[in-house]
Image 1 (tube, rainbow, N blue to C red):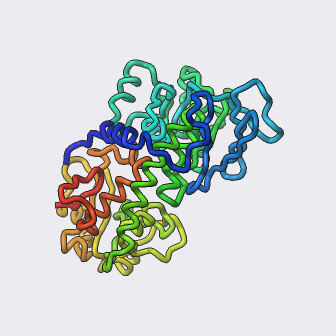
Image 2: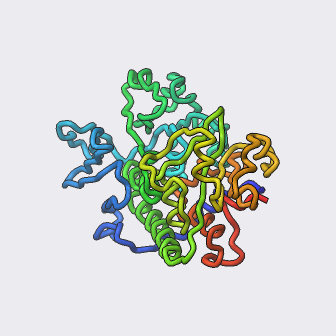
Image 3: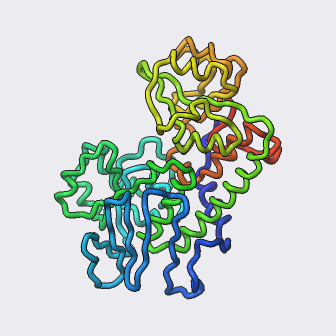
Length: 368
């Protein structure tokens, strides 16, 4: 499998979206000084309210920020952020993907590290010292954080954390909860959140409108299929199988791609279960989706070697394993803002008649 030229894909995504009118743009966008309105349709983690001289953003109903372009004070209960910001730190690949698709790497001054990072522009900026590595969550290098001189730091409060040392710097910490969204379009819609911070609301609206249009157009085709194959996900690690729950965004993509996820009635976003339980649930599933970081070329032999009982699954026996290797693709780096591409990869496998015959997958393909 060749490494994907993800930057070309991302640029095509951006360019392809330009010029689409959509419901997202504000009235009077023709005025270069106007700020495009932000309408949140799918994301549940943030909401937006505009007033005459500021934009109020509520995150997870407990973090409150006033995005202000003037010297006005924030209302009581809100933390002021002077926008547009020009310097920030990203803690996750999902956050970074928002800046990538908005062509705004110049705003990113710090990241946690470069593991599984493919973006040539970001790597060059790190090499040139324009972006610093601050260490992983829970073990931050405060000196490097200060060296980045960010106006705000985007964080993931439900993860490993370790933000106490950073809080002492006085830098505003802003939660980015895209990873908690259960709707693929909801996760991608956090592009608009970053657009508000960096003054690229119009561009964010246009990019998202293109993603939304392509996703929903393909989804509408799959809803008419007569046969919906079943699919299981994940594999054994350290004695347990981390199973995507029925409410997980990936389970929703399976459904939107015209398939049925084997844990469809589960109300969680994920859980760890024993092999025997997974086998009882998914022994006869038609397809098996796997995402890992295998060194070299992954194969059915490697899958069996990792857990001999894997050969018992119908999807293994019929060679219907759907695979993505994170060492060979920029999956986490760019897929959060490409749910339409993820959807098309799955549709091409589940219902190939619905995509063009020469379609080349970006992330997932059938394992040979």
